[in-house]
Length: 374
Ligand SMILES: NC(=O)c1ccc[n+]([C@@H]2O[C@H](COP(=O)([O-])OP(=O)(O)OC[C@H]3O[C@@H](n4cnc5c(N)ncnc54)[C@H](O)[C@@H]3O)[C@@H](O)[C@H]2O)c1
Image (spheres, rainbow, N blue to C red):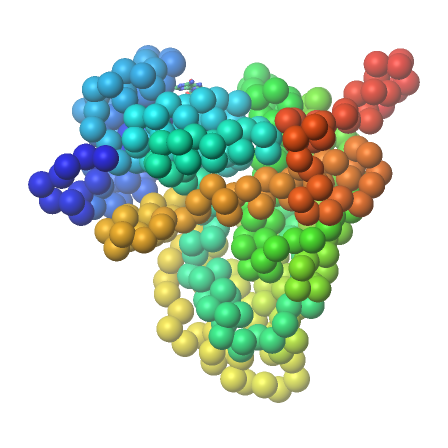
């Protein structure tokens, strides 16, 4: 942690200067005055140089060791492919710097627990990117739920119906278990069901199916899950990358209202609708009252992190919250590949789904090995 003359000005670096790094650089640039984007790292030096020029970044490094040796930082934004997240985050923790890790934070529950062990050992903290928790609609929904305005959650759904073509999967790290860690359950739907889980709280059990319908991947390209929550709510979660009319749709039916979010990659207040049960106008009035104006996205999350650092509180989203989402993903795969209903807490050391999301193996891979067309 740096000893800034003005403690409100933080210093950040970006590791991995590909696609999503642009959203991080844009967020940090928008928040200039509170945070300085001091350096960038990429194993591809030409890419790092072009990125640094575009975003007026002073220094670049070919690896994280050079960055951590030479820079005094508060935050390191890890924007590399998923298979490298944990080793890079551990290097940050050991240097006493907070890593902010892109989704998915790790490849497995074992890796999540390794990160937690290094957090305990070093006293430094991991943060994870789940930017859709930070739009004003999500914040208002949490507020109203906590105040009891909406009543109990009864039934909900999170549909991530996206379309990714063959060109998307031509990038070597996509569509495999070793580097991407999973298909749309791990990499795409994670945004939507993380938001669902952050609203509905502890999930209790999952029953799921997954399939490889049409993409040239090792991983699934579709999954569907039935979820029961500790509070009794029941939800369905569908994750797809084969759906030509794309949408990210969440729906919550509470005792006193239906709350829906319909968007694609980011939302504003206009993407939310609230329908009261019967003619109860107090619900729509309560929804509009005091709602902020944050778009969901990296700028809103990074601003919330800076607010928490300034206030001396715990920034979001901490590793413990991300673990619940990762455990949900492991349960979707475990149920899909074994045909069993999976209870929360069931997947621990010794379980094949603890060390890898593919666990005991995807049925289509087993069928291919046996010479049966998948
Ligand atoms: N939050 C979101 O909405 C969102 C959207 C897209 C992607 N992502 C996530 O962001 C991450 C990166 O995805 P992308 O599409 O930007 O990938 P990308 O392939 O476009 O970029 C990754 C970059 O990391 C560099 N890199 C790889 N290993 C490195 C290492 N060890 N050290 C330094 N640099 C390294 C590569 O050279 C490349 O420039 C993934 O985890 C992905 O799931 C998040």
